[in-house]
Length: 365
Image 1 (spheres, one colour):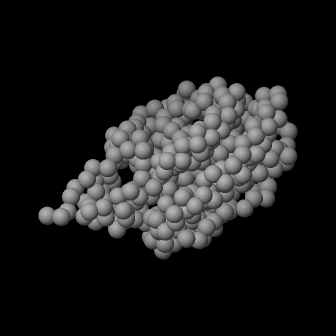
Image 2 (tube, rainbow, N blue to C red):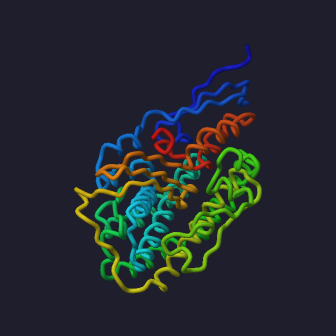
Image 3 (cartoon, helix red, strand yellow):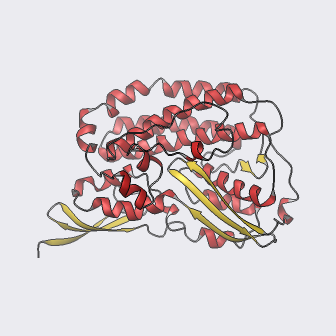
């Protein structure tokens, strides 16, 4: 009777939201892991089938409260594909800038959670402060700090206000100037290296077999990014790189997050320089009485956690007939996490969990 059942979370720094894991352990070694995503936000897909097309935008944001902006984008793309709506060129650039700003915000939040879980409190405080600076920009642009509802079918709600791009560039330069501090204190820190190298290793074959995307797959050396393989918005208008690491462990996954955050800032600068003048919105019929032509569509984008997909069906009415999301956390937080935890140490459960970049509402939706 050396085996013990241990409930890990949800009241643990290494768990997200009300996520918990039931562990079967022998000593401090994990023999079996069963993930429980909990009951945080549930039934989004079915709830969306009872609401009009336009009223679902506040709904989709809740599927990933850390990165709600890509949820807006994927839903708008699905509606546009069904209705045959063209998006103005300037709006495509505005969307790309907006989404990369959201990626920076999400990665800073992820760094805050990961560093806090490992005990690097200084780094977590820096990350949360810098994220607040990005949220200030979102508040100026959209009126909201967390949920923005800025992307709409046909474009975006409004153009950048006067002087907004200058303030955005200044804020991003301020954050970028602290990268050497992050590197010295955290990423190049021997303690972080010893805690994360060789922990939670996922091979490329395993990641592909279990549906891994985003940082999980790029940490194995695979250069896969929807923004490159299936470009949307203005991602094919400016040069940028897909960053990878090779070891497939927690260290590699977090370093990919770091590299992507820096690349997003450079991409924003390039998009601002290349952005044309023009409209940012293509008018659509009365949204409250809008009927989308019957049909089905599948669209995808690269969220801050990896490939995000949406299958959308219309029966020609004022509401979606069927809605189904393909979210990164479903594979990362269930199949991959459960397999990777087997053989790991109890002390590394939160480490591995956070490096998978899981958001619980993406699972039980």
